[in-house]
Length: 199
Image 1 (cartoon, rainbow, N blue to C red):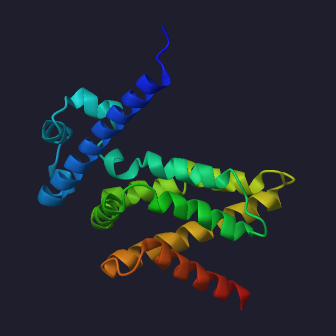
Image 2: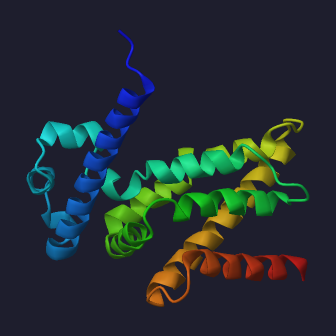
């Protein structure tokens, strides 16, 4: 028997509530005890789930902070459609920013603060940004173009320039105690990059 849309939606909502509960409990424990001192077992107990349930939602402890399925989905959705008159840099910026600000704003800010304070999380995020996550932006820029070495180099330069600029903007925003919105900070940083390139 195939479940109807209502049952499917209910399961999805229950799954999301469990995921959010685990993430909230993990963030609270990380902030109270320090990231390295917290175990998966402690997070699971705080969320009132079994450790095996934790692993159904998050492959590892760091994925509570860095997994961000909302961010990946938001970036993918933004990459699926170009806006009229949009430059390649603007296209990539819009897609990356969509991923950065997706989800609950408070949880996002708390996650970024943890990343800034934990070298292991910074290293993992760096690998993600320069690895598979980065490739989706390069692929989007190359779509519909002649696949040449120069085209790939151009796409990688744009993607990495934008990602590094936004990374700096996030750090600056956190160090400024989240004055204004993250989107505003990223927009300002990108305006400085465009200004520098045009000179």
